[in-house]
Length: 346
Image (cartoon, rainbow, N blue to C red; front, side):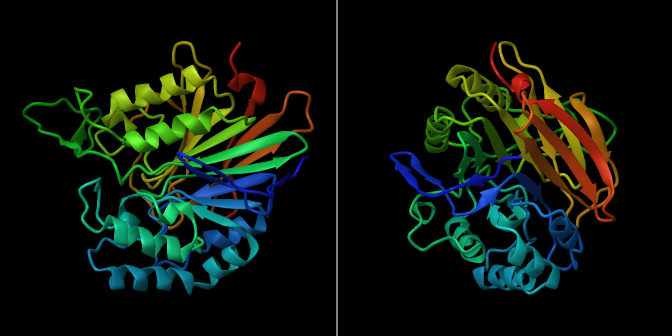
């Protein structure tokens, strides 16, 4: 199995792509880690010896407008032995969701977003000279390369630029399932999930050469509408993503996501595009009572604490991508394999 070595940094007009000096052959990921928990799952992650861990948001639960309070919450996380074990043994990269952003379900109107961004970047040791500190939002792209093979990890920011959600009104809207609903999809296209600058940047990233592209989103991308936060509340933006992948001919795209406090694997078939998979790993410490309806679900749900793992075997004639979910007892709960040739255009 190949390892991936990053040796340089590329800077463009749309932001920048980080090439960190590290090797990568398998990528772990997860979300929803409460600083009040001991988070034993981090020790399980280390036992699997991944070369990278991706935090997908709700990396702490710090709903506050007070940045001293938020910094203290991150400090609680950083002092945990299990987190220190993870940080010592595995390189970390991160995006955010709402609770580390600073307000539940918040979007672009959250007044402290620039300050909470700096608290987050400081916690994850973002270099002071980083372009990420100079532009709005926390979106970022990372390349891992060796022997002519490339993994691109794109971390989206689904908070800084996102327009308000539309509240569910039981007198006007229909439920999907028996659970409580909070939001409904936008019916017009005058709203955004990512914002103009991030969309422009993403298009540029998808035109760069890569064999596998892992797109990280705090909100689930590949599920059907369920009344909670997700890309399904912005169906025109979800369609825009599909069309962007198709128009840029970006091969090897799959999504990783968080937020919902359970794990599942979703698959979406979109006209003119290869199957798009979204593996959700949400519950490093958090849990939920039920999983909402999802016609796109092909594996799961996993309700106990867990993390996700992607392993790419480049040694095979048709490289194989293995998508897994492992729980806190080190039990494999999801295992699904995709040939790289299935994530390409005919």
